[in-house]
Image (cartoon, rainbow, N blue to C red; front, side, top):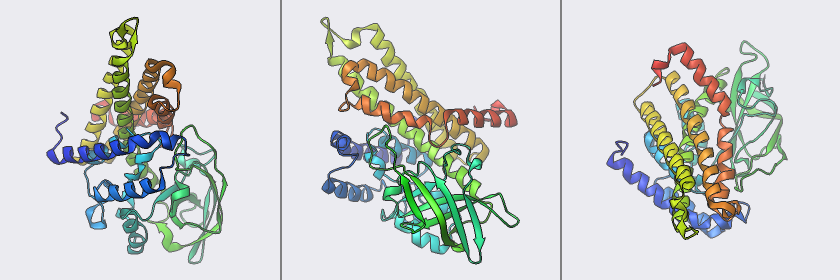
Length: 388
């Protein structure tokens, strides 16, 4: 099905098997702030590297796996089957950086990242600038051979486990004043501090703190690309992450449907299994249909990217994939929790955890509303026939 190659299927099976090893630790993580037992964490991180499930998106010349987009989707789909972000250790470092990185940046960030030695965080979002990246107020001011960075960033995912952070700000002077620039900041840094770390609906060990950058001095060599390039990199990152979000939504839906169907077949009410009741059949049928439609869309989008589709087409189709997959996942999570009944509202139940975890997929990396705006804009400019 889906015309996957033998190589694709082997990688998919490997990722699925690894995810299955993590699933038994979900309840432990739920009651331990998202953490695994230390010895399990160490063993699993080594295994993900040994299996070639880390850095699937990084070209081989930089030490990565050099996987196609459809292969990356297949791996991240299995990541989505595991709650509490335990499978995020199948990490995808910033592959977009390889296209513009200096030799120093390659050695300091890309190669260590592909070896699993360093992780990154993105400091882009602000209190009043979420999906509208151009609304940021953070600044970057040139001072000789350095830049001075200032701003406060929100939802800096994985900041607590990161060795460096990408900071995006607007240039304050020169011919590129008002345009965006992106910088790499090593952590810890005396000018970087956590304002506070809010609690979120999910229970994972990747924090999303509010982080202040106060007169942070970085060498000009820490800039990614050139002045004015920041938005370009942000868009590349968004396109990729929207595909990964879509893929994880597929995995979440698959897990929910599998677990809920198994439960409904065994749960007896008035002498009949739940699967004999029309209302339950409708919810299960709608859920499976949503999964099939979402998977078809996500896989097709991935293959279009592999085939070299125009980047504007990619941009809109990635938005379509994220929009549909994330909203479908929300529908499936709601129906499956309902079928579990009171059990579905218990934290020990996978439906309860995924119900909470999947909700954010309609928000981060661009809200559903923003995706619709992107799709409509491209449709008007290029015509509907360009995308379907």
